[in-house]
Length: 87
Image (tube, rainbow, N blue to C red):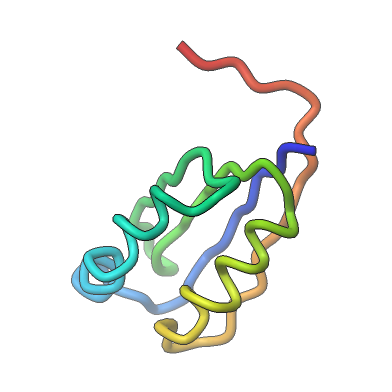
């Protein structure tokens, strides 16, 4: 089932996010199950929302590719989607 994930990486600055993204974005786009990625900066850090075909595909990607680059421990919230509409 399609899954939305939401994470806040506390204290992460835009420059740090950009460095991590530069290493991972191309690989992310070709990872099975990946649908979309959105990130924005807030007072508390960097917020990331992603859509995946399944929570398991997200978890495999996150644990093996993202987590090693993060300066703090992050546990993404996961929500099973009941509907998704795109243009």
